[in-house]
Length: 358
Ligand code: IPM
Ligand code: MN
Image 1 (tube, rainbow, N blue to C red):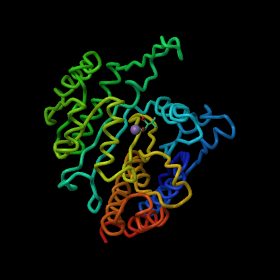
Image 2 (image 1 turned 30 degrees about the vertical axis):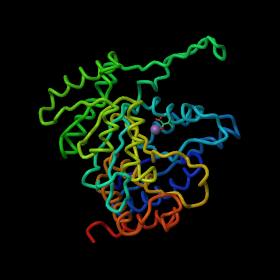
Image 3 (image 1 turned 90 degrees about the vertical axis):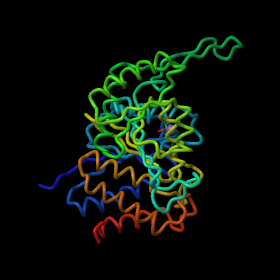
C-alpha cells in the first residue's frame, strides 16, 4: 500500500506563502517520483489573520497539527504587529506545545554559492548546529517591577534542566555518530561566566560523552565559536548549544553559507511531530514580487522528508538544489537570481523529476 503522510502547512506572513508554494511543488514532485502520497492541510495563521480577527493561534490548530506527520512553516512576522506577539504566540508556542526540543540547523556552503569568507569553500563550511529549543532564555521565566519608572527592574532568567540539557546533548551525540563525518561534537557554552547554567551543560556533556568513545568531545566558549566560524569553519562538525547561543550562531552560520535564502532548519521532537522552516524571516518588503529565493524553504522540505523516513526523496531534493545552485542560479540574493521564485521552484522540481543518476 502506498504510504500517506499528513503535512500541516502554515504559510504565514510576507513572503512565507510564496516560498511555501515552491516547497510544496517540490514535495509533490518528490512524492510522485518516490511513490508516496502527501496530504496537505493549510492553516492561515499569522500577522494578517491576527490583525483581521485578533486571533493568534487557536488551540484547535495546535491540536490539529499535533496529529500531522510533520509541519511545514513559511515565516511569521508582520510589520504592523508589535515584535514579540506573533513570535511568542505562534512560533515559540508551537515549539513548546509540541515539545520540539531540538532545533537542527545545517550550515553547508554549496558549490556555486558565494560566501563572504575569503579563501573558504564547500569543503571548509559543512557543519550542523544542534540548538536546544525548549528552555534557556526562551522559557519565559522572569518579570518586571516598577515598569516605566526610574526604578524599573527587569529579570529574564535562563532555565536549564538536567532532563532538557541531557536529551539535547544525547540527540547531538547520536546525530554526530549518524552523520559520520569528522565525528567531533563541540559544546558551545560560556563556562567562564555562566557558571551555573554551563556547569550543568558541561558536566552532562562529558558524562554522556563517556558513552560515545567514537566521538571526539570538544568544548569552546560561544564568543570564540563566533570567531572560529569566521576564521576556521572547517574545525566544526556538529555543535551543540543552548537556545539563545544557538539562535545567534546560526544566523552567523546562515551568512557564511550564502545567506538567509539558503538556510533551513527543523524544530524536532524525535518522539513526536516536527516542524520545518526556512530560518529567514517574512521579508515583507519583497511580498508578492516573486523575487525571494525559495531554496531555504525547499531545503527545509528535504529535512522534513528525512524526518518522516523518506530518506531517498529527501536526498534527491538536496541533490537537485545543489544542481540548481551550481548550474543555474548565479546569485542567491533576492532579486538577483536571474529567475523568479516560481522558476527556481520549477528548476529544482525538474531535477528531482529527472533523478539524480541521469
Ligand atoms: C529563529 C528566530 C526565532 C528565534 C524568533 C522569530 C522567535 O529568530 O527561529 O531563529 O529566536 O528562535
Ligand atoms: Mn534566529
